[in-house]
Image (cartoon, rainbow, N blue to C red; front, side, top):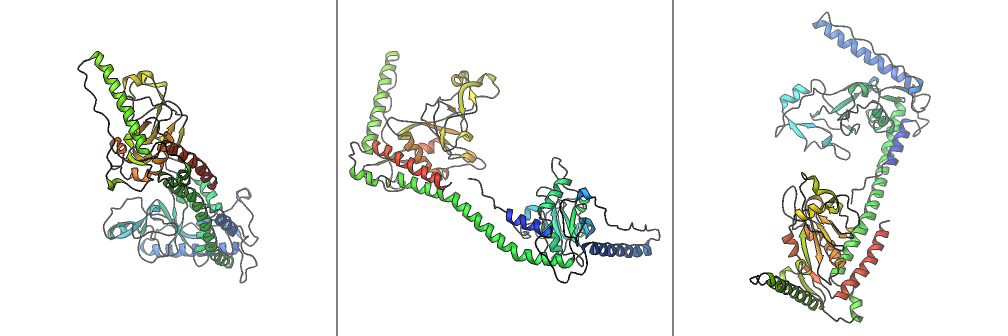
Length: 519
């Protein structure tokens, strides 16, 4: 079952409302418009540029005079939505002291050093400095000359999770990977927290989409980020919006978490109920009342003995036939019921049941993969199943087929309708199916043809209940697997035949209700 994502639509709506002027109104202490504020910001930035130039002239009389900053002209058709009259549209780069990144060099990792963070160190709401990569003081000194983050700055990823911003709320030294830019605002004039929230809005997501470079690794350039259209309210309004957001968003987060937990419970509950029902079924608890009135004509032990006797009779008959052609044909070893040690038995079963092994109730065989280099082996009419085709249900359609030549040439079995399948390798380990069509399988799948008259559906549901136990027996590293040898010796609780059928009947009714419970 895939992980359920939190529904953040309410949060997104509130953030969008905050930058369109719909979240607050009639703010006191509002003494200037957004346009007047923008003019003051640009004036201050130009003063700073000239002051820096004056300083450079002391060392270099030929230092070039900087170009003065002027407010951008924003065309009518660029404006994405209406904002209050006392706000104004500008560019993000105009209201920030600096938007930049470090040199595109990959510093070496050291054991104990200064945190070097990237988006992979972002937690759900913060930054994990403790587990981040560490770099040397020397690399920090070199790389931080261009851009050194400080409290109140905003980290903006330019690759991967583009625009998933984080606000810096620490005072110690750290560095930000060049996969991000650092946004340092003019804090005397603009609330960095207002910018932080605005950068999470749908409007900024649209701006990112407008400027994104859709290459092999999509990214947004520094100059593009500076060009983002930005709705600028008066400072008093910015502060009022931040206050309102910090009042409302924790409540929104709590609400969204409750909804998420409800959805997770809704999805998990049927699964938990299903597991509980399966466990009750294989312990004989679902048929407890049925047994009180049923007449048990043949116990599980008697059924097992009968199956073994019939299998031995067949073996001897085949030997008699073989002797007609070869008088020295070796007499087969007769089958005997498996011995089950006391410590192997995982739970008690009714007296009319018996414990045996999976190998006692069916013929288990893994398939194989015909050589892909032989074109005659494929595109035939014999279904060839891979573990990805298993869905814990009946198998009716199999996308790939092999040929008659492949079936004759390779170590592969055509399994009849009703065969029970289990995936033995990798990510799909433990996945199950029952064939509704004749089919072969690859080597990662084991098929069981149950011995008559064992119920293949009862076996299927038993295996469903044993997924965890069987998976725990898997071995291997990157691609763990359950071997056929381990499968066939796994304990199996065998009820009388009539009770197997009754268990299946009850299970199918209850599991259908489980599915309805899940909606």
